[in-house]
Amino acid sequence: MRTLRGIVVASVLTGAALAACSSGSDGAEGSAKAATTVPNGRSAGTDQAGAPTGSGPAGSAGASSASASPPPVADPGQVTLAFGGDVNFDGRVAALLNDEGLAPLRPALGSADVSVVNLETAITDRGTPQPKLYHFRTTPQALVTLQRAGVDALSMANNHAVDYGLDGLTDTLAARDASPVPVVGVGRDASDAFAPAVFTVRGVRVAVMASTQVDDFTVHTFPATDTRPGVAGNLTNARLLTAVTAARSRYDVVVVFLHWGTDYTTCPDAAQQRTVRDLAAAGVDVVVGGHAHRVQGHGWSGRTFVGYGLGNFVWRTSRGPADTWSGVLTVRIDAVAAVRGRSDPAARASSPSLVTGSTWTPLVVGDDGLPVPPTAAQAGPEQEQYDAAAGCSGLSSSPG
Image (cartoon, rainbow, N blue to C red; front, side, top):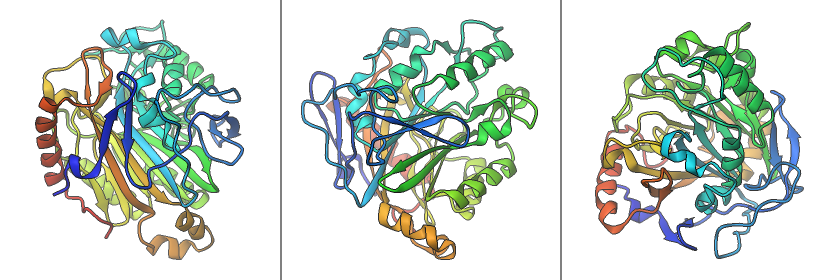
């Protein structure tokens, strides 16, 4: 059985600053970004060597790291991808809504080549609350705050992106268009919503796309279609698989960030497992997700690496300790194999996984909504939940 202690080292650097260490999980942070146009009109940051960086607006100098030590040197043989769970800035978390509000997360997120989280909110001060139990909204500052924390891309394919109706969606899409980092999973039509953000990292082309499988008001009322704006949704997987197939034909690594699962459960439900099988058959390299407010298991389904659930990340409320267990999942990609597969699609489909390993950095969401390293008293219960999630995931500890 894998354990948190066996696969990760987490330490506090300056104050609440966080670092995660694992052999081979190096990246670049702090250099200036240039704009790389991607198919949906958004941009993904790359430095002059082609490695995405985790701080500073596109085209400007990056912020200095919150870490007390210099950033690690990128390994030319690998690409690192870091994932965090659900984020919003409602209620108590609004106090973090400034340029440095999430700075303690910069070492964990900014040290990866590409970092992605799920932004679960509308970006608007207009609109009508929809007939739902919970409504989240924020300002465009949220996009800057996350970018300054080292986040390189955001998913908004979720059940709160359209909490304030069409007026709110109009404002959200305007904020997306002006965002310092690309936003996926929401768009002016289905083609836009399902389009990936694309990063070129040391010659490896990484496509990140998103969709929601949560069977609720949002995906039924505001699904992106050929003629209407909304969220990318996959209550059935046909449209998602079409988008994945297109991305697979163009890019070296395909990542799908899903909003899915059953609330307050540590085990994947039948829809999650079915979707993993479909995406694995379509050749997706990495599948991660959120929504269940719980950390769910991660491992391999064949050659596809899966992180079923990342838990809450920057979050407004808690029903109890289990809601606070969180973390950053860092995945390592074999850059040489990824580029080699470009010239031989048949060999690529049957080759071993491009994912060579992963690191789970355990965190606990604090009273202010910010995730920090667990205390000694918190580590035991969090370990128990992690073990339970691993035990029922149905995933393997190595590629098959």
